[in-house]
Length: 103
Image (cartoon, rainbow, N blue to C red; front, side, top):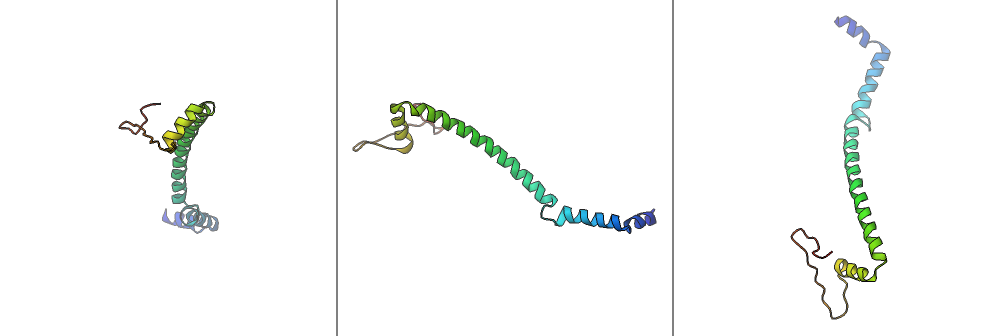
């Protein structure tokens, strides 16, 4: 049995193929560990993409609501960018979850 395995291992093509497999699996720049890290990073980036797509949709709805109404534009600028008229103070009221009380 051992001699049969040794005879197969001495075959040039088997030895070359085994050497190539070991090189590609552990020593190449795209080895198994790198492939695993890249797949985990891809999974994280896809989750981030979903989050940012939701944020983009939220900003688009805000933009559409603000473009047509001057009063809402002023309110948005005062609350988010703390813009004010001279001799005026702006107070933004929030709850415990840091959300605006008036929407």
